[in-house]
Every structure is written in C-alpha cells, then in structure tokens.
Image 1 (cartoon, one colour):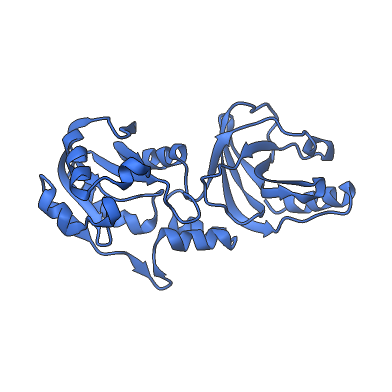
Image 2 (image 1 turned 90 degrees about the horizontal axis):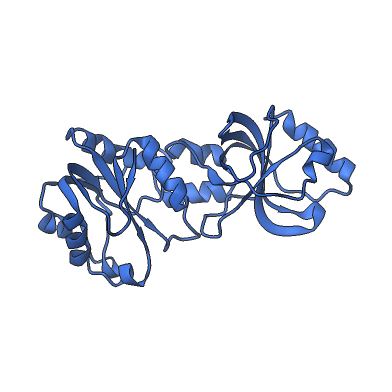
Length: 284
C-alpha cells in the first residue's frame, strides 16, 4: 500500500528513490523505475504539484492512485508554494534525506531542483548519502517522451497518443455530484464530476471510454466541457455508463477517455441532441 509522506512524513526502511516532479508517470520514466527495482529495495518517488504550464496532468489524489498501481511504496509530495520556491537545492536534499532512509537514488539527466532550479545531477551526487544513477532521457521516432508532449496531445484531442505514453492512461477522478437530471429524460442518465481548476484541460468534446466505479467497470460515453445546448459554460465532466443502473452519488469514480468521438456541439433542439446521443452511444 502506498504511503503518502507529504513534506514531513518519514520512511525508515532502506529504500531506493526516484527524484523528479513526476506529474503522473509516463513511459519515459519506466527506465528509472526498472533500474530502481533492480536494487531489490522498496521504491519511492517524489512529486511536485503546481508551477506546471497549463496545469497539472493529474491531481494529488489521481497521482496517488497512479503511483499505487505502479507499485511504489511511498510518495513524497510537495506543493510548489513560496516555501519550496525559496528552498535551496542543498536544503531540499537535507530535509528529504533526513526523512527517507535512502540507499540508492535515480533521476533523469534533465533533473533540476531547488531555488531557481540551480540544483543539478552533480549537486545531487555531491549531497546524496548513497550512489546516484543518472539516466538519459527516453526518445522514440516522434521525439522525446515528455509531459509537454502529452499535454499537446490532450489539447488536440489525440487521446490515444496521450494514453500510449501514460502509465495507466489519462483519467479524471472525482466524487459524483448531483446534476440537472436532464440526461435521464433522453434515456441517457449521466454521472457528473467537477473538472478541477488545477488540472490540465483536455480538449472539450465527447469521448468513448470507460468508467471505474465501486460497482465495477462500465463502457462510457464521456463529455468534457461546456453544455452549449443548455447555455452552460462551466467545464464539467458528464458520463453515460452503458449497462449501469444504480446510484453513485457521493462515490469516487474514475473516467478514462479512450477515443475522441466529436467536438462539443450546440443542438437546435432536444430531439436533435437525443439523436446524436444515440449515435454516440453506438460507438462506445
């Protein structure tokens, strides 16, 4: 089970540690985890929330789910606030290594940390109480695997490309809220999730995918964005779960878009919307 250390917790068992911002976990990070696992020690990871262009790929709660599924033993999570912003690279390492019984450290060659990003792999090597392994960035034919590349794919609605690079794929996690109950009048009852302001905005549109719920997994038709037919501009997530019949209010659900179906559209009538929903549902 993943242990969340935050900025004050401790992990006293000898361990290996992956250092980085880790807004989620992508295939470019896999080589770090593979190398760390070869130590035979429990593997932990650091992560930083905030100060990400356009927002975080994943929220704090979503990252915890990702790291847990990936098999990490703990995560040291930091918020990029004024205190962290003004912490020197050396002070950052002193605090971290004072709380974690680290026996091996792993990072990418572009790792930067501390005030004004002055800390480098060389800084780390001189301060770490154990061996430090610095690995090259991972590339493929399309270029370097990076969070910025994944965000570009999400912004374009190229969800398959983003999912291919992300461990477990892109998803939105949230607690099911009460909605307007309009969908059920069309034969398509939906669950509603807030779209966190700090989360990077995937392209508005209708996607085919699936939902993980306490009642099981279901194929899903997912709408990210506004609802212009009803004059609603707030970005939300709505999902119709094919084959589900029950109550999920107040429950935690994860929505996994898999295929972009169409952009958000304004329909001239409720009947036109209903016809389109039937067509969308056939594609999920």
